[in-house]
Length: 266
Image (cartoon, rainbow, N blue to C red; front, side, top):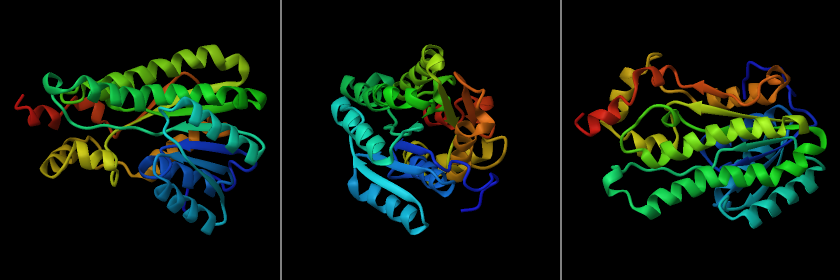
């Protein structure tokens, strides 16, 4: 995998990635492994995790697989402990597990709202909390993947917006509390990303074409570009960054809700 960073940037480090079986999480895991980190993959579907792990090992990297639902704290804590024990340490945790769908607020069920909050926000807290003891041993970094809906009012996304805004605030609060323990806590807010399940759900068909035309940079991001931004934050280059959310959206937050407004006839 080509990269603008020097090789083996993460040599000797161990990382854990939730949502590591597909999309942005898988891309981050593979880039970390390319730079020498041992990577633990967490997700609900073992088959997807196995496929990513096979790619990493085929390329000469080290990966372990931990089928886990981030909503289950007890199971998540066990997976975190198992990964740290297997690798001898844990230096990096990436929260990439997420769930989303389109729904007008007036017809969104309480269960639907809660499901996204539980996966995105509660799952992120669960991983952060389970990682604390391991990261505090030698210092470490937590990176949470959020979204522009955290700040940009977006119709059909009240559930995701609330969850992502919570992640941004969680990031700041944990950075303040855990800085003296040697733990940096940061977040990345991607815009539309090519080849992800999330974009196929949120901007299908002609909506995707309309969104691409409105992006100031004129295209979607690649998974590799988002992964590279995360690599920057966990690398020595990002050593003085904590409590911040890095916007990696091609300028989409500058145009507001865009095509989502069109979908509602607004």
